[in-house]
Image (cartoon, rainbow, N blue to C red; front, side, top):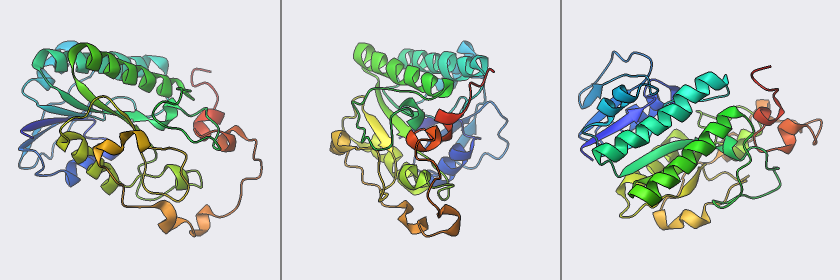
Length: 264
């Protein structure tokens, strides 16, 4: 890779990806709404608001790949989500189309399918059932990626990220946990494979408890190596839920499914 754009570079996942992908591309262009002041060798900074069409057009120029982690990363007001995740994603794809970028990693979310029950195994063809406005915005991004693949040939990995933290934060994450190393190995595979297409990929480590099936993207050759089983005996994860019908327990989206509407 010659020049790869990393949006959301100042976010929690962006910071980790930036470090672990150091030297992978000739140049990593870092972008975020927040200022980035510590560029290293092989990095360049070009921060902008994704809702600013002209700024995004300049941001994408000269890039041959995009890792799109930018935008609002959790539930928020509709106006915030509209600018960062809907208008911003459209601006990014339009810029990619006009500048000839042909491969994108779009950071989608497990909250696109959060209202499926936990005892149902999902795959790439499972119906979207978002659990919040943030999840709705990621459904939009996945469909936009599909349009730009079918109409313009821009390949996108629609990566439904589980819970990418240093370790699982609660019992739910024993099923949804994704290690940073597994995410980075997936990222490399997405850009290294001969043909990507426009697949839906569940970004989750090789946990013992799994709700998602990646069989339909086995052609990519990605195999996660880590597992939440290493944390299963931690005292803070012990104790069965008191109410199996609590929406936070019943549905895959967890607390996102049980939370009230953000605008209320």
